[in-house]
Image 1 (cartoon, rainbow, N blue to C red):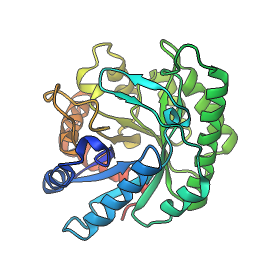
Image 2 (tube, one colour):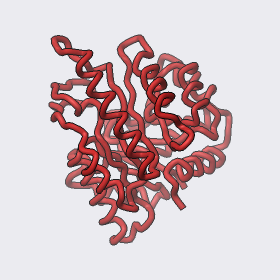
Image 3 (cartoon, one colour):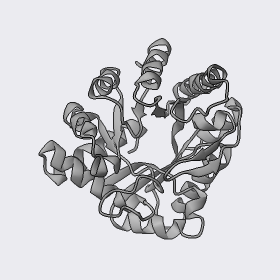
Length: 285
């Protein structure tokens, strides 16, 4: 059994095929956690989880609800795998709390800080302030509901600035009563250790199969297997050998295989420990 701790089968990219995608995953022994980025995608993640409970996938599909930092303000995003205009949303604590109280919702997020995509001609300080405010509210909500916190972080190019700011915010908020992960981690091994020291789980996805910098191999070597969870971040970041295709939860097996190679461990051990980690993170029975 494997757990894809961060999927977006609730996104429009899967509109016509999400049921088939989930069936393929579940039949292969993959449990799926769908993550929201705004109210609409969060509601869809909850709807899919509820639908799955009634259609032979009971206990196999869960939801995370929250507001992504890039949606705290409006901008045009045009990256290799992402082309859309963000819709500005103010974090509505009570609306997300209602969603979060659903027993199929196992986390709050993805939330955090994203400095990588701050466009020229915008008030960066004001945008960062908005991102931090939304992030802090979601930390509060995760604690109130006793749900995992799913953190998104992308620093400015060639820096660790957003990671450092997140660590400072977590220190101020306190992490002793918080289960949390740093999703799609691409920072330095040293920053990874700072998160681990605070009790974080570190999310690895398809990036480790095609990273040419060598950084992710160093991070994988640094982070204990007992603090690692696996993810796809589908439909993005498709792992080798499926580069060029749309990613899906089934492909998390390739992340597990690469991690086993980097760790010099058996695939069975990676599957067992990362699955147990995911169950601990999301409080899954």
